[in-house]
Length: 94
Image: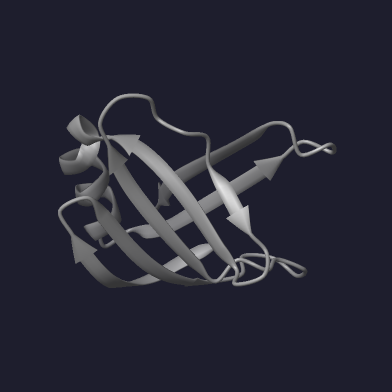
């Protein structure tokens, strides 16, 4: 998914809108949560097209800076065939 703009920001959460980076992609929104303690695996809600990402609270400034960058921003989400494993990556390009 190509991230197009920020929608909402709070101390523990960022919400961003995007468009599919390829045909067949359902994702349209990313919610980034900053948590204390154990960081959950990323997840994708197909019903509303939302990818949820989780980072340790200490990473908030670095993740925020990357998402505020003027470079092209992308989020890639992967889920195993049985749905037992997930991974997600936030990337910049340009």
